[in-house]
Length: 128
Image 1 (cartoon, one colour):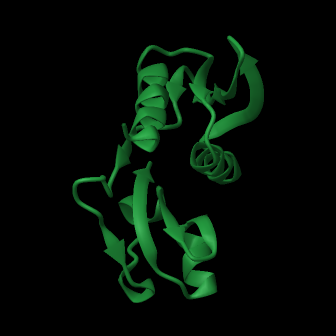
Image 2: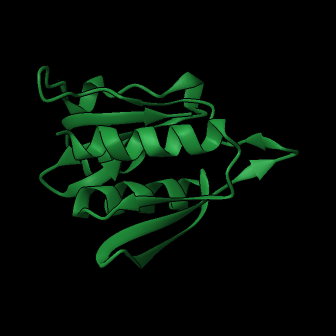
Image 3: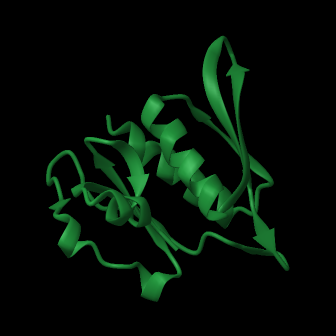
């Protein structure tokens, strides 16, 4: 099971249903992705909570005038087909309006941080 794809699908379904928040299973990678989404302004907040005896993430979704800030959130690198990129090949998402999230040797970071640190890696997902 792809826990990152599951996390992204829960967020996507929450925004499509206009839910104020979603509860997703906790993982280190999901928490790192949620922190990047928070830092980039795509979500309001993220908290670690207890859900039925298991650690979970409560992600408060962000809306402007009733419309979700997240228009599209898509998994790029999949377990069946990994997608890697060098630092010089990293491209902005939707002309800089979106963000790519990469898994690098410096951790899970946004494409902006990857360019600053001059590292490439696996393109996990894109959000805009």
